Structures are given as structure tokens and as C-alpha cells.
Length: 177
Image 1 (tube, rainbow, N blue to C red):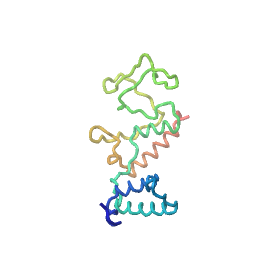
Image 2: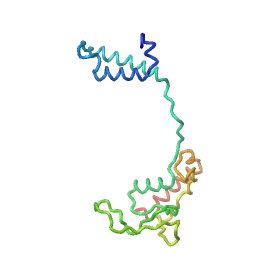
Image 3: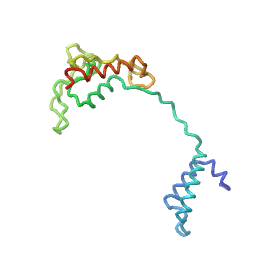
């Protein structure tokens, strides 16, 4: 039971329920006179202030600044420039489709799908990239093989320069247009 405002100020969850009941006009009850709109607004503002005090400062987990990995960079460039070719070869990419089965505009799935797996055989297709464009170095693998963890994708000045050079080589490639 709450006897005063000090007792109410320590329970953020209860304050939220009270705010919602007043805001959705569930309180006061139907057999009581309704609150004037100015009184309701002031009351909600005061209760909101109490709730923020009861909740305390928000604590957020540290999120490291991260860059794109090479797959994300490749996909971003392909999408941004609406390229119909591979920007640079990614030999570690697992599955490769050979017959262009993915045609969402047709609304149909192919009857036969031919794919290859590069790690399982050297005879699989290695796509040719844009002329004169080399990918940036392969990203380090984190735990369980992931290469998109923010704490592993740092951005040194040297890497920033290589990104700039890579971007210039992409736009200056004779295959770009």
C-alpha cells in the first residue's frame, strides 16, 4: 500500500500502469467525474517525471564502432551502383549458382538448380570481378567463424586509405559503366 508520493516514487512499474490508466481514460472510474484536460496533462507530466526518477539513468551496453566486412561492402557497392556483375571475386563464398535460377520477377521457382561449392572442388566457377579492382584483405574470423563482429572490424588509418583506394578503383574500372 502506498501512503504518499515518496512511496510511489520508488516503483517505476506501478507508475507506468497508473500513467497508462489515466492516459487511456480508464481512471477515474466511470461513476466519478472526469479530469479536466489541463489537470490530466499536468498530472501525466508529473507522473512521467516521477517515473523517470524511479527508473534511474538508462544504462546501455557499449557498442563498438564498426565497419562493413568485405561481403557487406561488396553487396553495398553492387546495390548502390546497380551493378550486374561481381565487384571483386570472393573465393571463400560458399555456394555458387551456375544457371541464373533466381528470377523473382518471373514468380516461379526453377525446376532444376545447379550450384557448386568452391571449398569442395577447384573446378567450380570463380567469378570475374571488375577490371583492375582487388578486394580488400579477408576479414579475421571471430569465434564460431563469424566475420561481422564489431569488436573485430576496426578501422585503422591504413585501412581507411585502402577503402578510399578501393572505392576509386571501382569507379575508375573500365567495366564500371
